[in-house]
Length: 223
Image (cartoon, rainbow, N blue to C red):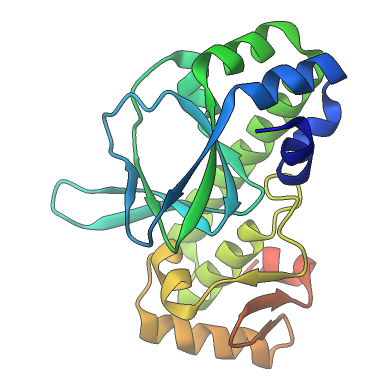
C-alpha cells in the first residue's frame, strides 16, 4: 500500500510523521473476503492489525450451547485487533465478513514498531481503546435492559461512532438482515424496530442503507 492509499482509508494516518506514514504503508497488504467468509476463527493467532476498507466485518462468537453472539460490527474506516496485537495472544472471537469486504492488514512487525516509536500512533490507540471500552460498558447495560428497538437504536448509533468509524459518513450501506446479524435480533424484529425508529424521526431507511437524523436521541434511546 502507498502512503497516499493509507491516507485515504485511515484517519489515524494524519497523526503520523512522513517517515512513520511510509513505514506504516509498507507494512500493509489488502485482502478481499466474500460475504459470510471467516476472516479468522476464535483461538487463531491472526497477527494483523486490521482495517476495513469497504464492506462490514463482524466480531462474534458461538456460545457453548450453539447460540451466535455478536460483539460489534466494524464498517469501513474502522480498525480493530490492537488488544490482541499488544498482548500477542490468540483471538478471543471470530471475525466474519458480513458482506463482501476488503481489509487492510498491517503485519505485527510494523504495528509493534509504530507502537514503540510513534507518539501520534499511541495517542490514536489510547483514544480508540477508551472509546471502545465506553461502548462495551454501554452495550452490557442496554443488552440487559432495553427491548429490541432500543438495542437496534444503540447498535446503529455504535456503527456511526465518529471516533471508532470516522469514514462512515452520513449513510451506512447495510441491509436489514445484516443489521439483525450485528444486533443479534431476528429479521422480523429488525424490520419492526427500524420502522419504529423511522416513525420517531431518528433514522431514514432506504434501499441502500440507513441514515441517522438524530444521533443524540438514537444513542440515548431508552434512557
